[in-house]
Length: 636
Ligand code: 7RM
Image 1 (cartoon, rainbow, N blue to C red):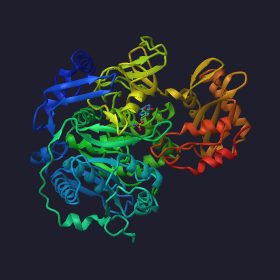
Image 2 (cartoon, rainbow, N blue to C red; image 1 turned 120 degrees about the vertical axis):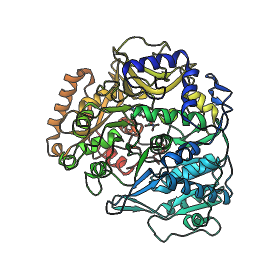
Image 3 (cartoon, protein in one colour; image 1 turned 45 degrees about the horizontal axis):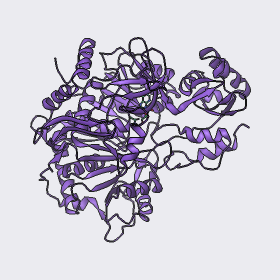
Image 4 (cartoon, rainbow, N blue to C red; image 1 turned 90 degrees about the horizontal axis):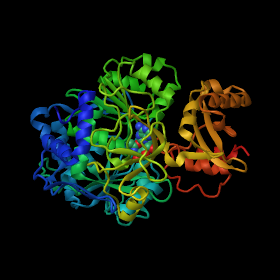
């Protein structure tokens, strides 16, 4: 049996069972067969869940960039590692081979060393989706510096708090960035962020928009001239398995963002293994994940996972609707994409538009399509399946988190039969369980519980930067001995998991526990509805009642609103039950979303309650202006 890649369902069960019986042997074989280590580990795993202390491949020595790049040079030196597809379709795409990537990463690594970056230093990377971004991550990893990428759509305030939190002395940014027909003054945002970040000594500035930006003497340096004079010979730092590779901030539901720390050995093994299995990757595939590298999805499945497998990975600078709604499909056709990985929010936004945008393009190169980031509702699943996968390409609905490092639950394409809205089976090596309020494992089907993982896997984050106690409290306290995901899920009769949404998205109405996600699913099936978000609000009689914020498709905008409200409630009644009917329905122009496409329900909850006092940290919102609009039209 090929240990690395599951070929059929029987093998899946065999491997799954083996991974539960002998987890150390299971992971050891994967780590042994597929990577270059300077020194093998003494012990596969050491852990104590009560203290949230987890170590994988203890005392193993490696450098992840040796595995991402150098290891491929003999066989794949001239193969394309990265295809850069610019924002403007008229600008030529760039094909960067493994040899070229090696050169560029070595040069950048030398520049960083010359600038004084040492092993263990934090380097904040605030770059658009240009090749320098991937190169910067890898250059940090090469010299043992800890990268902390901040998505280049975040505000100065958000950037500042992340720089300060990890005490980064170095920042890599660009003059500006392109996004659709807009350009953004990135350097200006950095300058503002640094007003209150005195620890930053050096800012390296890449050129993208060629705008004239102020350069602060002694602090700011243009990157290109430094790269031009740098040597392309670089000896990689020898890293311990458990040395931090990167910090990535994820917003908690309250409070300041959490700097999740991932370490080198386990993250490498986990992203490589999951990439190959989840996307059924084969040599010469052209793989495209539409995420931004500023998110974990981009770290694990644009950069590390694909490169560890010697794959060709696409970096797209632009957005789905520029210059028109066919951009994604044009790119699929142009680069003959074989695996396409995107988020439900993107799928829904494109599904609103005419299917002519899809039909204009040849999607026959596609083999596998994936979804990530939130539960994919039934309607979006079918649209994706019918129009993009053309019923030929299995959809892999991948459930995972910043904290998990890589995919945890997902159908293996051509192995696990798909089922709309189900993420299906946990991957071999992932011991998922559902827990009830009494902290007992749920054995029954169709019962929603708290999704936990009861054994460590190599990709798990090791701590929250600077706050290990918060790490313990957030993930290891609710269910002692287990990692608590914060998500609710149920299992069907064959053992498929369906993620029902964050556990805090449950509202108790007249004593009934109602998950808001299934109600949203039902509403979204109404032909006039584009998207919806449901929250609870206090109600004298029911305890809580439901408030729906709904955006309409073009066809819905001209309808009589009260008729539409009745229809939507009727629809909920027949699909879920009268108990789930909404007390208040507000049609809105948009929903407040984080920059990664997650609806910020916390704000909607406050609006529904009529509490406008403090919306908390809104610096991660993509569309903060929508909040006031929604507030003004609130239904009493
Ligand atoms: C990869 C990523 C994590 C949260 C997670 C879930 C939700 C992600 C799915 C999903 C249902 C999915 N990391 N989530 N994937 N819910 N089905 N396939 O998104 O840290 O940014 O978010 O996203 O609630 O806990 S993340």
